[in-house]
Image (tube, rainbow, N blue to C red; front, side, top):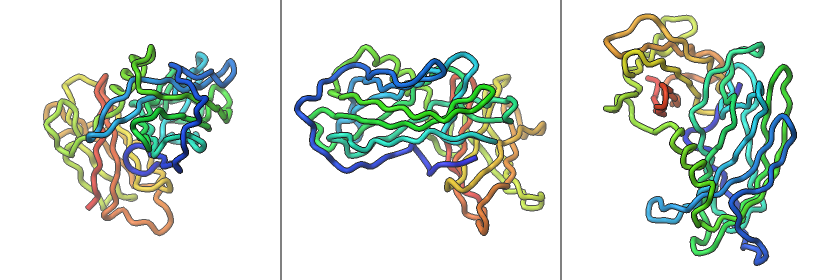
Length: 282
């Protein structure tokens, strides 16, 4: 089980000029087999902080019964890893992660996707006036009864124009958890957190505010990939209407690591809503 650094997975790249022969398209070719395949898809550009931002997505197709993993896989599994080396006119690429689901099977309880998924990409160009040639190597794992490591390669030029795949990328972006502060005034929010140091091992009690009757799933990630936190467990006790309480056991810390002052990234999912909040343990 592995974690990731806080916030989106961002890959910084050496800047290469764009080859004159590259042409833009809506999608790349699929790379895979009957169990899974991956490709790049393009979307219209947007602006962020006054700068042009190219949009794309990594579309992963899964055969029925197969699954793949989120950035933090849970009890077992391998999260996807991305290499955009060789891309042209690219300053950085941010990989965004749609809200996952908790999957219980013979492997244990893992975190990921059981159906086709699009992982949005936000690409910062070195020169906003030129297209981007995106080249990707994706290493990921798929599982049914057995788990299989997969490597897929894809290349696609992004020119920022509207595409037939705009809707697919936009829909995936809407499924990415919204970043918000603790105790935010929102239908779904991370509320009070308390470290129960008397528990053995220590645990964090987390209150989640959500609409009454709506199921809530909580995921927790540590500050570095070496943290291997177990899945948060829902508790029966609550502090008021619409409040769900979870326990995060502070187990699986790296040797010599202390939880005091550590930042945990919490992702709460309830129906179509998902939020991401960073808390600090005191």
